[in-house]
Image (cartoon, rainbow, N blue to C red; front, side, top):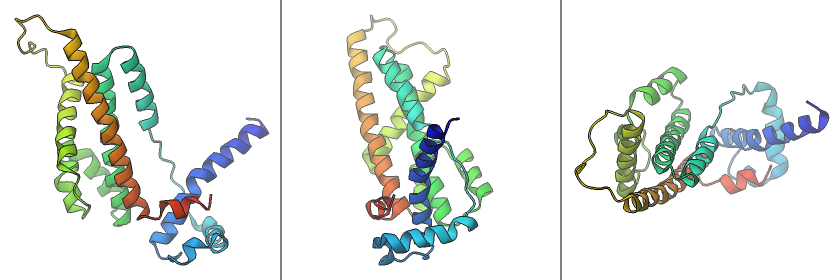
Length: 212
């Protein structure tokens, strides 16, 4: 890795790590609401905490999943695109739960067990309520259930006959239906990202990110 690449990597790490550090310090009361608007105070407190902070690197696969989903969609493989979008939806729900477990000081093993054992519908209904989070809109819960079933039918194929298999399928109508579902999933992902951002940064995202 040359010096230019190292510099680019450092900037990338700083861009992602510093807001998370500021948010963590604000959540723990080290940085107050009033201090959050003062860049000098914020950065002094960040520098003071640098030697005490343990960093964990977590890979977010959603961008890769979305890239492959778009490629599948363009290649007219809407079933695969829907399955990939649905997987991205579950990753987004897991992110919301992961964030709230950290906020509530739930230990790592318990958090991992929760994410591993609770099914998708449980994650967007009773688990959300149990963690004290705002309910996910009912229309989006129904959409999550629908796309979960579509993904499972693709990845866990049971070799069952197609409904109305005695009729000639209409490929244009089927494609139109799939494209409609993909459009809905993009709206759902935007909603879940906004939901997580509001909870993770408690309405202070813009103020925190202006210090980077």
